[in-house]
Length: 148
Length: 148
DNA sequence: CTATTAGACGATAAGTATTATCGTCCGTCA
DNA sequence: TGACGGACGATAATACTTATCGTCTAATAG
Picture 1 (tube, each protein chain N blue to C red):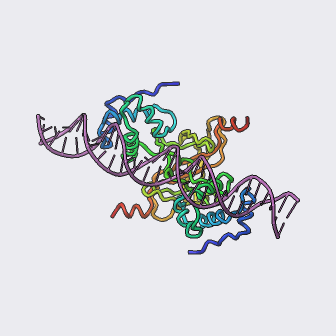
Picture 2 (cartoon, rainbow over the protein chains, first blue to last red):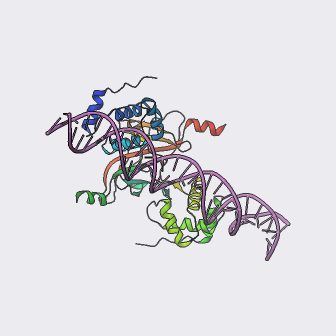
Picture 3 (cartoon, rainbow over the protein chains, first blue to last red):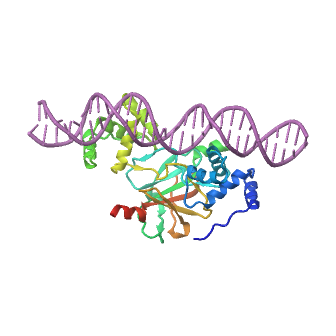
């Protein structure tokens, strides 16, 4: 178990400057809490822990700043599919093309991949069932909308 | 534009029998609506369309039956990550190991893949940014829990 | 073909997760 | 130092999903 080195205020200011964000105390603490929590905690879990450092913090601030960090490219979302329940009717093995702008999902057959990933090392005891590949990008419609 | 052949009542009954489900009218219409809607519509969108065929249908029935179909293996979820917002702190290129039971997410470095997928064919105009690979299976802890 | 019964249905209340609004406050720059 | 813009916190509002419960229907045994 090794400690995660703490990000000093100076480099946090630089990070913010690079992404056009004001370097506030709340943001630094939020970032630090996220950095030191293992796994991929939910906003609620982050909030609970952050509240221990800044009791007056609000959950809305956590959401607002996570979204802001994502918008400005400081963080990425784990998945593009977290809005609502979606299911597969397509029986063949296939994967997805996901537009990061409009979130549209298009199926793409497994045969259209020339190569499939193969895992060399796995954490002990994990039993693999299948792969799900998301190809993330910008769809034709959103590109058109952007350039206009 | 070709029509999607409609599933007749007989084969729907077989489908249900195979998965231990009662073949109700609502379920058949739900299944049929989902089958004939393009893309991956949300439960609300499915409900809206289904309501045109069965005005008395309830949104709760849509949710209940989608879940039931998923449980029994008739359908699959598009993504394992639709509970709540999760973000990435991990800077390196990496992917995820996802337990389909407990939904835990573990990072896995890109180097641990011997081969990365390559796309041969793309729908015109889609601009690829990156790949996100989920390796779906059962984690060690859930296997232990299952076997005990 | 009918009676029985488990499971399905629909209405609706409740529970999560998330976002918007708004008044106030703080840091920066003139 | 004063004005301004962005950030904050409280809270209301909204979206999404699940639970509950009384009624009804499909499966099936006779």
